[in-house]
Amino acid sequence: MRKSPKWLDDTVFYEIYPQSFMDSNADGIGDFVGIISKLDYIKDLGCNAIWMNPCFCSPFGDAGYDVSDYYKAAPRYGTNEDLKLLFDEAHKRGIRVLLDLVPGHTSVEHKWFRESMKAEKNAYTDRYVWTDSVWNEPRGMGCIRGISDRDGCAVVNFFSNQPALNYGFYKSDYSWQQPVDAEGPKATKEELKNIMRFWLSLGCDGFRVDMAGSLVKNDPDSLGTIALWQDVRRFLDEEFPEAAMVSEWGEPDKSLLGGFHMDFLLHFGPSHYNDLFRCAEPFFSDRGKGDAHEFVLKYLESRKKAGSDGLICIPSGNHDMDRLSRSIHGDNLKIAFAFLLSMPGAPFIYYGDEIGLRYVENIKSVEGGFNRTGSRSPMQWDSTANSGFSSASPDMLYIPQDPSPDRPTAEKQMNDDSSLYSEVKRLIRVRREHPALLNRGEIEFVYAEKNAYPLSYIRSSGDEKILVIINPSAENAEFPYKHKPGAPVYLFGEKCSFKDGVITVPSRSAGFYLL
Ligand code: NOJ
Image (tube, rainbow, N blue to C red; front, side):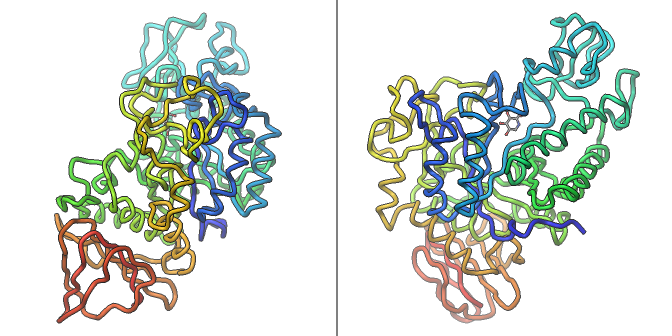
């Protein structure tokens, strides 16, 4: 059985987009020293782990997901020593740090790719996936062609400036498609382990792995990619058993089999995650026209596949999707967090979501962000210039901030017991106080009907059982339940009432009741 690090049992993650969190040197862009200065804020909120988006050398054609040197921190954020200091300072506060590992592709500027573009055979010739002629485009895959001395097309993994690293093909249809055990793919895998070894030895606590399911090509059931990660798992079990591995894969039956501890619910694909938050009629809305039913069905299916030890995490948002507050408003943001922070798996809070940081409309794409740019604007800390993010002139900021005069700030909300921040902090505290609500507690859905409200489930662990009842709509709702629930350990809005086997749930409320 897979050994999950114990520390994942009560972790609440905070995702930091390093460009936009805190600028310590007035250049308009966030940095490691800035993050260090805000660790106490993260701790005070109740989070005890960080996922930091890529922070390695990069031309930033995709905000750092186009790495040009895996072994060196991007100078805009600081040095490797600064990053080590960030690990140390986080650890002093009981906070773990996951780095973002991008194993599927590099930047075209990576020296490996430059070498692999050469006509002469060298150590990097097979580091990337190349066809055998510039006229021979890979079917069904994007490619880079006509810019190298080498005769061939380089397969891309995402944007056209992100050539795919070569981990081989599960099924080879052409001679240029190397098998997974060829020398080139084997060397790429060993280098991946070296990169992980390097950062884990320096003090990081694990990785969020970008596009983890994309590595082996022509691998319809992912058997080749699963085997690759199982090999990485053996290495981690031997050398770094405490390192946590979280995959951006969205198929827990595959990722967890590959040895990951947690998989994300994704905002694309079949998860129905965004039925709840980001669609024309989200479940978390006053209008009460949303539907949590499909989400629940898919969630239960994924949990079954994940097995007893595997975790599935539901993020509040991330750097790729619209801010939660773009489609969810007012009390419903609090109710959405009551859901997020009462579900199994380690919750992930995207920086700023705890204060309802807004999606910034109508701004120019920055560093390959496109429509994602509006969700990546600098954090708003206080009432000083640039909301305390940076002392640079506003036109130098990496991404413009929300221009509204009433933009939320952490400072204002920390001083207001009725703010979103205070509610999120309360919810994290309640979660920690109750093992049933924690990452590994069980879940059983009690009421999750099609196009109906409320949503209700029981979380349990050992002797503790908690009935969660969530009603975001502006109307009261009711559902059948056999027993009168006990005292609430958490309540937002009015308390539910019980009569003759029916629970009546007040509008815009969330409650966690002891059973
Ligand atoms: C997923 C990342 O979250 C996204 O930001 C990035 O653009 C792609 N993977 C490519 O690495």
